[in-house]
Image 1 (cartoon, rainbow, N blue to C red):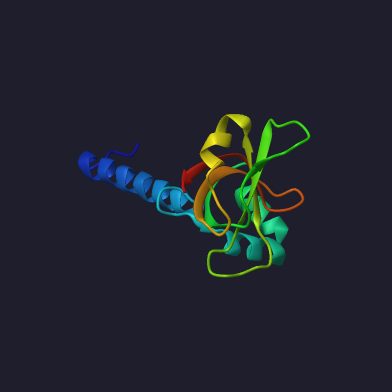
Image 2: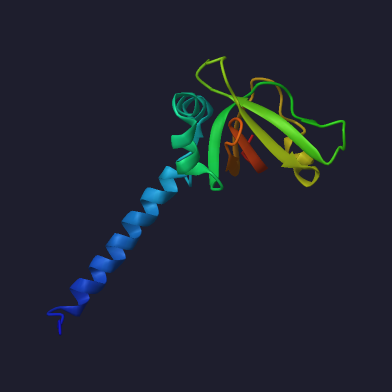
Length: 139
């Protein structure tokens, strides 16, 4: 049977370990202060979609970049909208599709082409770099 010599020391170690893991995961998934560049996400996906999917698939991530075009609701049903987010450093090739619901359309309505944005959504990399259930974090 193990007996702790200093229970306060053990408690402090547990708290510090938990804090370190929380911070690591928050940054890894684009949590507060850890937004992923759209260009970095696209480049990583082009190198290895399997690696990116294993890391982010089904997880909520935060992506920063510039709007390629003004956001729009899709004409087929007007219940879903799309904004394409490109690298904010001038990379033209590739983008992240950010799909949002009609309920969030008003938040995306005033986004113009080349405007810097930060979006958050659930990563879906089945065919490309898509974010589902997007919301606008910062216009």
